[in-house]
Image (cartoon, rainbow, N blue to C red; front, side):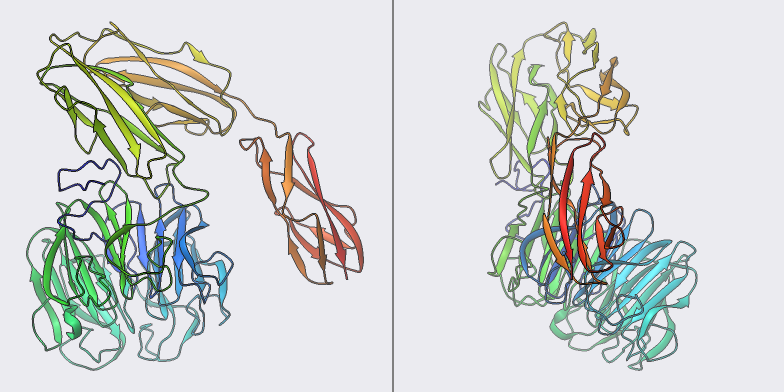
Length: 633
């Protein structure tokens, strides 16, 4: 596989330069994955031995250690490849052995270990599935054993472990529910036993443990309430006992523990106040347990600190005392206990470092000093690659960029590679940009292929001596059949004249609730109705109407056909499959034959009432039914 920055061919991929690693993160500021940036999905976080990623479509995936349920999949089984956890997620944060997620509706969810109340649900009960904690949240962070959340009104709340005052509520007792800390907060970061907040005015405050000067207040005294540190800061990130900050002028600063060079300053003395590490225009920082990363606005990645498991991704296990250039084309970074995650500007997710619990997600448990691709299997893996146009005419010396679509939108392995069958006729770069050479009358085939080699698409490129201006775009008069809810169909517009040069169609649809259309013209039915699609290239455009119809299920299956449950207990039922798979709507009505014996709610949760047998039915809108006989003891 080629790498961007090496002149390679990655369309939706992550790239490493000179064998170096590139690391990931997103909007959150997790403790062991203490990352801070401004941007969009994908977002990642790394805990002590587990990993989280939010893909483009808002789906949250998790893998790695799971002894405390920190993956959120309802089990305590470690996973060496990603498992699906939640949907509609904006960002995530990872503590030692617990996780937080912020959904698009502003709700905060938590799961994993809860020994100190770090889940915020009022208990100390471990949770293996996400539970809702609070609403109206705009930013989150996870410390070693404590949690932080900023509400939309700027108020900061904290809960969990508090032996060093890391909650900032002027006490040292752990809290099982969120407690108020301060107002006027824009973002937060959670360290091992300390916390940081950036106000809307750019001031930084810190509190909690200070045994290594990690509070940045020029002493070693713990603080139980926020203390002023510095000003003019845009984002912060916190590791176990060190911190990073980017100032509004783009410069990179650090303070705290000097062990294993986490601050990037070549000194054996703790930094008791913020010290500038690098100048430049930095946009993203990530603090692992004892290692750090920073990304410049041009996508250049730097890393430093502890590297015993190869978590810096530079191919070695040597501690780096100063920032080391690692690669280019980096979107965002995250560091865990001794592993790191990687997302490039084109979206491919990689990982590197310790892998004892499968936290690299490559289906193994062996450590890696150089980045490997996080593997995605089962639902969510790439299922289709499409490209437009399928035929392209170019004048010698001219260029055009092909449109590529990878399905599903939230798949982890978004990378594709491009290849020209004859580079003497036309060459193609890693972004799908085709340039015709001086070989009029010749042709070549451009192939785009998924990173696993399973899916591909082709475009025939003809080099012509003279340009032919596009007069009109040809589209279907309408699409009234063959498009059901969940079904896909690709539109391949024509042109007049047929050999118009440089024609690459673009698409827009006016009703995304009815149907979606991607860059390669693949329409996906969403709900019954009509939508108008506009197709254009240059100054020429045309429209057509797509009608989406419902697809009736012909059969459904249920997870249990028989179940035994004690009085007062519950059992969960759900539909496991539909025939056809794109049946619409994918909802059922749940019914009980005897509500005195057992009831069932709208989600299939059965509650046993008294001894006896009852039939629970799931019925589709068109009358297809499946049943489960429940015996109540």
